[in-house]
Amino acid sequence: MGIYNATLTAIDKEETKRYAGLKNINFNDDLINKACLEAQLLAQPKGSWEIYNYDAMNGCILTPAPFLINSSKVLKLFCYAEKVAVMTVTIGEEIENTITAEFKKGNYAFSLLLDAAATTAVEMLADNINNLIKITANKLGYNTTYRFSPGYGDWDIIVQPEILKLARANLINVTATNSCMLLPRKSVTAVIGFIPEKNTVAQASCTDCNQKNCLARKGS
Image 1 (cartoon, one colour):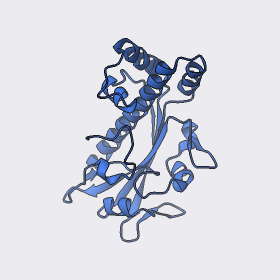
Image 2 (cartoon, one colour):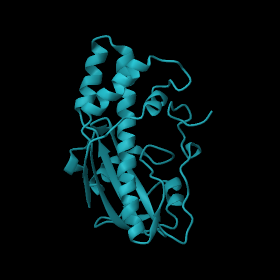
Image 3 (cartoon, one colour):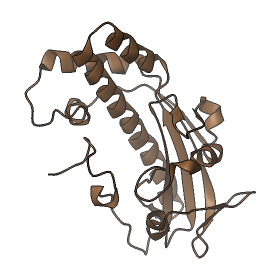
Image 4 (spheres, one colour):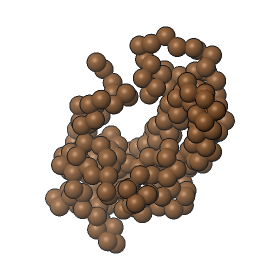
């Protein structure tokens, strides 16, 4: 089991613009800088993860109550996996409260940019946890797949509560609503496969996701 508590040293401004849908639009750089700095100050980064053995033949994470993966995309991604890391990250509630407060004040542009900066922050945090998991995998003689989250591709978001349990999300106070949305809202769950080094590891691609109109979608 792993627990992560650290600060974010910076928020990527270009990614923030991309999440705000502004990658090809000239926008007030001072406002973008302000949003990124505010997100950095308000973020309360935390992460937790657990590593389990995995039965690729049956698509099953081997927990005391075995968890069957019901996504063809994840099953394909994990076809050579022998272990699986289940992770969750969050940047806390304070930044959400500030986004809402700024919107209510009529600061719509800043609220939009702060929300995008918060999304960037949680993805950067997920990358950091991903890298720590990769280091652990490499020490054990494995490569890692890219991470895959419930709600993407054909993986139904209904599994979110079970994924939270597997990731020990209670340790960082991340929960799910009745509609399986994460709380705090700026949180992420994901699974990562551990593949023996002799096998090829697939790379992440937006073509694997069915959300065609996503503002964060890369490429044209």
